[in-house]
Length: 169
Image 1 (cartoon, rainbow, N blue to C red):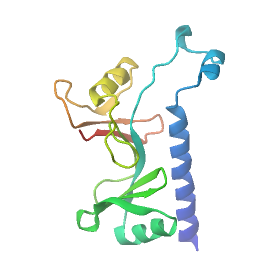
Image 2: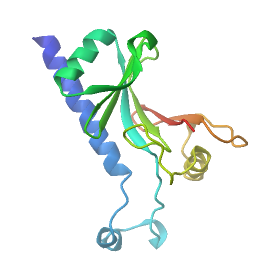
Image 3: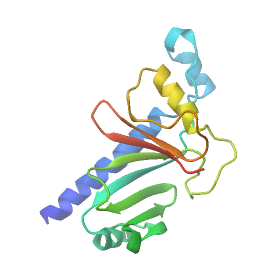
Image 4: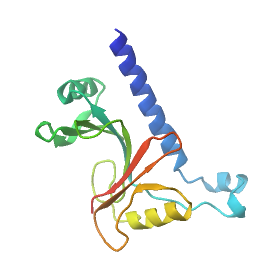
């Protein structure tokens, strides 16, 4: 019973973090923008980070898969033989990863929608990286600024949560 309570609490925290982080990156509508105090009187730049998911480090991929299927998620990608699954419920995405990393990671995929499909209009990861550096955000790892195509970067939020921005094309 305690394990179920712990899992439910964890799940609530994960979705709460997802809701909170998505609200951080939303662009205010015109009425909100006019009523907000913005830095130097200018509107904040819109940063398109792409599809959002949470990447969970799991102990047993099969048990976690069954648990999330009971919550209405279905497998979108990955595979048991690869030790990871990407699961989807409506617009919600989670990645289940066994033995690949410690802790959980907030993940953004520039150039993809929530179905893992390419979108035409997206901000390249090197532009996102330039923006973050201009805001004096410390990066844990960086994309090669002289490259193009697939790349990733890592950073940590003020509470030491790991954030992965992972561009696949």
